Length: 185
Image 1 (cartoon, rainbow, N blue to C red):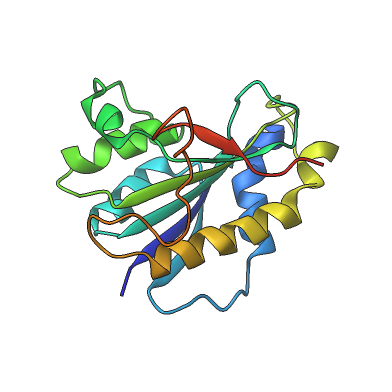
Image 2: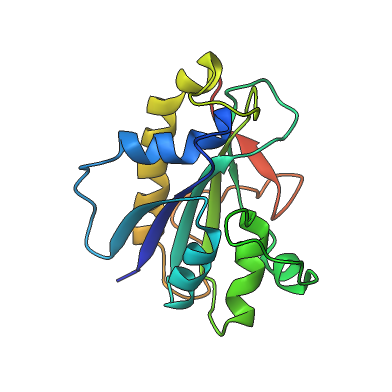
């Protein structure tokens, strides 16, 4: 059985950066399958890194992601883990650790990353302030449904080596590491 972590990240005090936390709020109380853990890590990137060291077969990371698209556009991204691991170690701020830095830290801390999928949403604003913009708020239900689909795929996927059931994201002309826009309202 696959162990899958669903992790919401972001700063609720910086507008749409609170997307990950808002999606996790929509999923609060959901009955997750055995082996699945869902947590809102907020700005606790260092806590997420240490959680990942415990060994997970899959990670669904939910975050605001700037891809220069229309605000509210959802993306499923499979990051290039080899590139993340090879990235130089930067000065760490435990309260502002970017997801790329978290992924790079895990192998350095003795952990192993399983399959990572990022559900990102194009923010309209990352300015200081509470609350999400209208375009990001409008896609929260779609994002929550997409998280459930990604978790289902991760739970059913073979544990080691093989591609998941169904067409993998990023298998188009851009190859692994490319993103596929999912939905836009």
